Length: 395
Image (cartoon, rainbow, N blue to C red; front, side, top):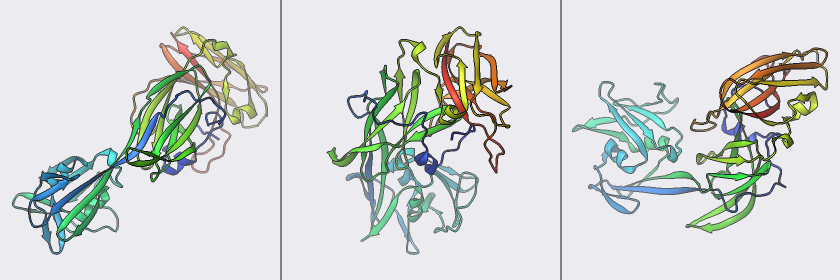
């Protein structure tokens, strides 16, 4: 059941989501003739000599500030952390006597943004909150150089080891390399595959439901132990239903972040495209207007929406028609793709409703027909769900 609300997607929510309206059916034809993406790790290692200034980054000699051994603990200069390339920024704030370290997103650390304060045995979030139950050797300044404990870098996605006066840092970049960023099809579904390094989490694909909400789908492994570029990969296959026009999607994995791609569905005859009804919509809703799930109109034209209720319910007082303009441009997990433009409430009388909504500006719109608020929720009161949708091109 898809509730109409802005959804903050956790890892568990992404992995568990599915929808009959958009999820995969394994019989769909495969459009791309090759894998559209490849997900893998690039390992890095930095080695220091505690007795000198020599260092090696990925097997190549580099200049590095000498680490310090103090009270049996290893401390490293901030500038050495900059040299690794793992940190996006390392900022010293003299007034607060603290250093803020922001890691590159591709490292996928437990914490990507942390602050260390001189003389403090705590680690702080960007909001200034100390990580609970965690203490570290205190950072310090010596000869104008700021040192932080090397052991604390594990919070930033680095594993650290010391043996025979050699300190080793190990980390990896997690990458989803998109090989086929877009393609077109005349079909209502598309099937595609990707490779993922077999010791990483299985990827998911993500699909926008509308303004503020995304869903996801799991795929199926079709091939295993594919040897390529010194790694072993599995191949994952996904199938997704397509709306007319552009279909922005995402690949997502806990171990590698996100990557975007787009599938363009071409429609020669809009009249043959049905209005899409969700599982709940098929149970409760019959639409007589619009007759097609894809139409082209002039900006400002009235779009008629009418229908009837298949199963009466005393809570069914109105349906809400919401126009969402296609306006991609967000970044990160589940970015903004549709922006709410307008909405119209249509009262249900004697099991029927009718009304119109107009689109004032040119563009592509996803029009959702949302149910009355009949779904009980302890925290948010009664909620609605989407019953149907159609696409409109306003010229």
